Image (cartoon, rainbow, N blue to C red):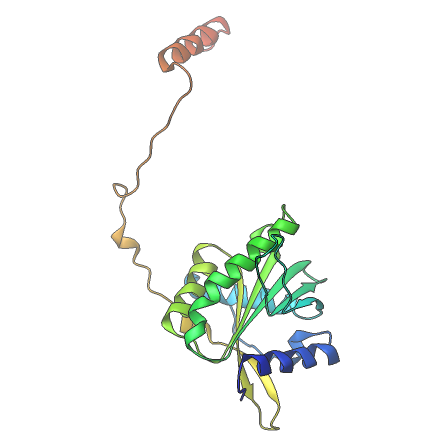
Length: 219
């Protein structure tokens, strides 16, 4: 479909020039988060939120260095802005299997740099869109970790060719990212902590008793 990643980037760049909506080149996505599977629902909710952010987008940069530090190179494939959800969208393209292991490192670095420009931006204000033809184990586990454990917004897309010979983007099935979580492996003895007090505990208890005594309350 694409000879290399550069060709994929040129295709998406032309699509964005002709259309301000990235959602228009994405095939219909019909998964619902209604159900009893909380793990799957978290993934579907993430996909749906990201899709809402793609209805109208503005291109901030395309394969340009966004690093604030001189000499460092940080080039997200696309940096977009969504007026509807007021989100920054980071789009990362991968055309072959081997470099997909870099996606987590790259998206983390790009997100951190965006926050350098906007220090009070939360993770919920950043949408990550991964467009890839290959989805190896490392990448799928990374996506699950970001969505389920860190509650970040990630959308996974794959380029496909429709019956008319047009290249579109398809949202991946959430089942590809599901992982088994066995809560029975944890008990209340596995997690522990300490409370560090900066005051004298006995003195504090004594002052508390004296206060309650003077106030007429029962201790």
